[in-house]
Length: 113
Length: 117
Image 1: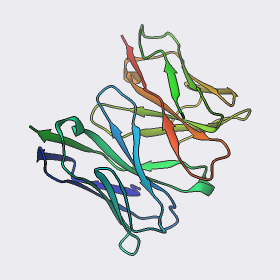
Image 2: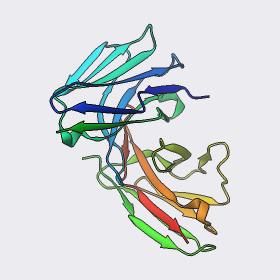
Image 3: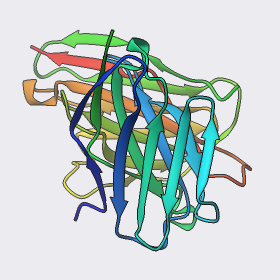
Image 4: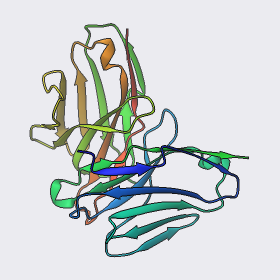
């Protein structure tokens, strides 16, 4: 059972544009929703994370929007840059389940100069 | 802070040999360490969860006798791929949860590329 669904699988954005990646989850008990950025041949790096008690979190050019009733959350990358080209994974976890992460399928983002 | 290292970064071995991968939390104590494998252009697949001093919990479909996990201390976990075969070739990534944190963060290592000839 895929508990976190991510879309789109790939995304091409022009430099300066907004990149938007969406995720939907099924388990309403999840209490932590991080986004990871992964470059080829490297491990994932935590980008930004949100908890279900807030609807939005912004860090620099990265914003998470969270809709608890719809069980959806999204990552917005403002002023996208070629250096943002990477694979992005959303995830969800549950603290009393040992913080085990359930990952989305990933989105390969390409930002064209 | 919260740096996780892995060693080696890449390894090539012959079929039938065993390979050990180390995962260390460099500047924090890890309550739990996780092992993932990732095939090209795919998401991370959790293999097992390990807590210091106890046996690892393996995900369904992961052979515990083939993928031996030892969590000897709060800063070190090892994954040994026994009798490796070409189908075991993959990118293996560990992560660690911060002990004592009220948050759920997992910090990932840089990964180990295993190629079995």
